[in-house]
Every structure is written in C-alpha cells, then in structure tokens.
Amino acid sequence: MKLLRVACCLSIFLLALLAFALSTSTTHAQELPCTPSNGNGAQTCTVNFHNDVQVFPIGPPPACLISGTITQTFNGVIHITINKAGDVWDTGTMTGPFVLVPDDPTIPTYTGHATSWFGDSINNQNMVSHFTLNAHATAPNAPAIDFHEVGHFSTSASGTNPPLIFDYATC
Image (cartoon, rainbow, N blue to C red; front, side):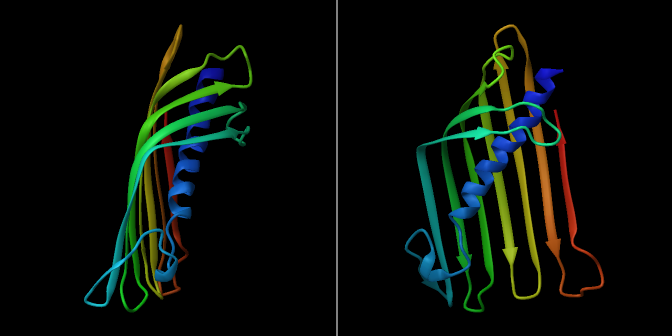
C-alpha cells in the first residue's frame, strides 16, 4: 500500500503550505506583510502571491512511511484585519500544481494540483483556527490520489471546556 502512504504524505505537504501562509500573518499591525489601510480604527491588508515556488522534503510521519521532495508552484491571497482592540481576522487561499518525487524509486513520481484555505479569528479571550486542504495527483501506471483534509482548533474564555480540536483526512 505504498500509494496510500503517498496520499498520507500529501497532508504534510499541504500543512507545510498552511504553515507558510500562517507565517506571513501576524497579530501586530506594525509587522503586517503589507501596508495596512485604516478604517474605523481597524487596519486591513491583502497579500498576493503569484508563481511562488516552494521546495521542501517530507519525512516519514507516524502514519506514513514514505519520504520525498515536493515542489509546488502556487498563487495565493491572504487578507488580514486587526481592529483597534487588537482582535485579528485572517483568511487565505493558495492553489497550484505540484510534483511529489518519492525517495523510494519503486514509487512513481506524482503530479497534481493542490488548494489550501485557512481562516483565523482571535481576540483576548477566544480563538478559532480552521483549514481545508484538497489535492488530486496522478502518476503513470498508478492509481490517482484524491486527498481532502479539514482541521479546526478553538478555545473559549469560559475555561470550563477543553479546546475543541479535530483533524479529519480522507484519501
């Protein structure tokens, strides 16, 4: 089931894209990755990416026993809003083609298209972060891979309940 392991590792690839997107956003207006505009005490900005290329290795996570190198060329947009109270909202989408070259030469090279979306809402008492990841990949003489993942993390000021966390992936 090496092909299934390839599908599992796509989540690592897509999570890396999400991490890249989140690393470009911040909760401090003076550190925003774009020039904010003011409106009613809020600052907003939009960052666009065009034909950006990310190359990164993926290792064998616990559920996947494959490693390889992913190259993704993507376009994307991230919107960030911070109000005068310091509350933050952001959302972003990235999409583009990718190539997955497994370290194991018995596994074929996959090419495909991936799209990731994320959104965050943060204030001084509550927060919610969520994302979706979708990918479709094919390889010569191998079955196609369709991958979908959705994740959520939220906290509440009540403190009576633990954080709500889920991450579901299907291949």
